[in-house]
Amino acid sequence: MAAPHERTRASAVDVALDGLPVESRFIMAVDVARVIATPVGARLAGFLKEAFARVASGIDLKACTMSISHVGLVVFGGDGEGPGMSALATTSITASALFNCLDAVMHAKGSSMVRENVGGREAYHAASDSPSDNAWFAPAGPGRLAMAGTREWLAHTIEPDAARARTNAPLAAAATRVDATAPVWFVMLFAPDVRAAMLKSLPEGLDGVPSAMRFSVQLSDSVTLDLVASFDNPEYARQAAELGRILLERARQQLAASEFADVLAALTVSSEGNEARVHFMLDAQQVDRVAPFLARALNLQAHVRGL
Image 1 (tube, rainbow, N blue to C red):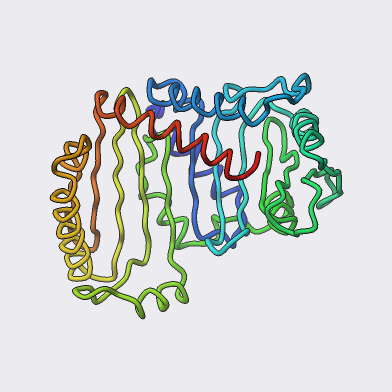
Image 2: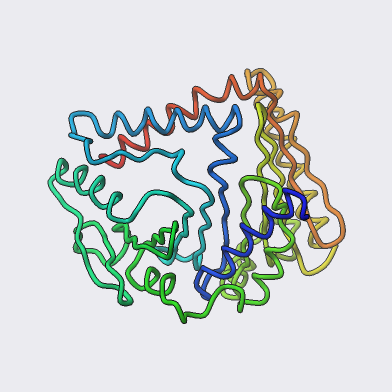
């Protein structure tokens, strides 16, 4: 029998590669059930709940019977260039239930949700004159919802015969290198045109740009982040790590007298082979100090978006 973390790897990576469009340049996986089972995740879920409560103040939410606990694994993919993004969620929330909830919220804001046929399936999106950024979603099989930033990306995600991200061999190879034991991970390939643009604006001391990037986040009552950038050769990775250490030291000096000085003390930058790595950890006490700032940031985002 496979170890739990190997089942997690198969689940998250396979769902992403078999379900996301071949145009995807990045994949992000969030195992919501595992996240909210941790002390840090439960606190974050509470912040999100409070932010939504402020957003929905004065709105009749009888149609909104779901909660974050009804969501399992969520995988995101996109082209990294604007609204081209989609997500697949394993959830007990049905598309129609989500439609009814969002429609109630939208009506209270003077708008509505709209039904439309996409790829032979009933899909839903926010009424808008814009073809993007209007919350498209549709059922994507038993216990699964597909969401996207545009109609085109939703169609690419729910079409049964559509090419999948697994056929993007470089992305598939990069995805197998992530730490899939983590409840949150991300992997991205930099397209040739993006790398060319990055080369034009390199800071002094760097001769190369990354070809790929990945990170993973482990959660308990603490938070551990590992970020890795892959380069074409070891010298480029060494240069990137050296610049990172210089910038980190400057930041430490500037914040030496602040209450967050010890947070930066736990951050390290290194290189090995073709990769440059950033490792960062917040212990439980540091999480307690940072948490109020995160809560205020979430509430500010809700306010700025006018939700």
